[in-house]
Length: 343
Image (cartoon, rainbow, N blue to C red; front, side, top):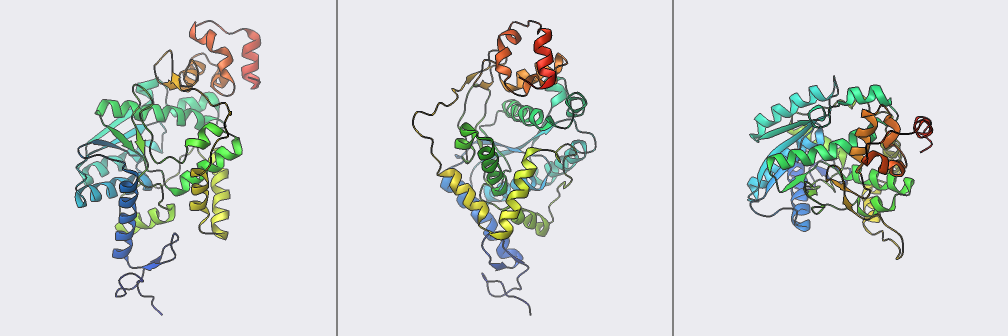
C-alpha cells in the first residue's frame, strides 16, 4: 500500500529519510533538505551580506549539490553573496580530466564564474607523476596537502572572502574517527569546526554548509533533482586510510542510524586537558603558508619529490629542516633512512 508523505499528507512518499525516518514526497524532501542547510548557515553565521564566496567544485555529488543549494538559498533568502566555483586539477588521467568536464557544465547550468588551478602549474608535478614516484601507499598524503594549498591559491586569485566545501556529516564523522585512531589531538580538537578563521596570509577562511547533511540524503537530493555530477571514485583512493574509517562508520550506521551525528557531537564536545602541549601555528619560512614547523608540509613534500626522495615528507621530516632550508645535500645515512622509512 502506498505511503503518504508525512509532511504534506497529500502526495505519495518517494523516500524515507535516513536521518529522521520521515517518509516524504519529492517536494517536501527538497524543502526539508534546503531548509536544514539554511538553518545551519544561519545558526553558525557562515556568511555576511555582500561577501564573495568560492565553492570548491570537484564535479562530484557533494560539491554539485552544494553549488545548487547555495544558489537556491542565496536567491530565496537574499544572502547577497557573489558565488563562484573553484576547481583543482590534480592531474589524474581518466578521473579528474573527466570530472572537470562536469564542473564546466555546472558553470554553464548555474551561471557562475569558474577558476581552475592545477598541480602542474603550481608545483610542477601532477598526481600521475607523483604516484609513479611514491607508489600508491602514501599518495593521498601528497594530494590532500597540495589540494588544500591549491584551493587557497585559487581563492586568492578570485579574491573571495570565504571558501565553502562540500564536506558532509559522514565526512566529518570519518575525520573524527581517523583522528581518534591516530591519536592526533590537535586535529581532533578542530576537525568538527563548521568554519575556520583566516590563519595567515594567503589562507582564506573555510566553512561547511553541508556539515549536518547525511551522504545518503545528498545522493537522493542529486538523484531526484537530476543534477549533473560525476560519480566515479578516484583511481588512487582505494588504499586510503579514510576508507577503513568509512567502512567502520557504515557498519555502525547499519546498527544505529544516529551514529554519524552522535560521533560529530562527541567530537564537538571534546576538550583538551590543561597542560597538554599543542602545536604552535606559524608560517613557512620558504613559501609563507601556515605551518607549525619551519617548513610547511607542502614544501617538504615538494623538496622530497624534486630530490628524488619522496619519503622525505612522510614521518618526522622536521629533523632535516635545517638542511632543507640551507639547500644542503643529505648524507648517505640520512638518504638510507628515508628510503627505509626510519625517519
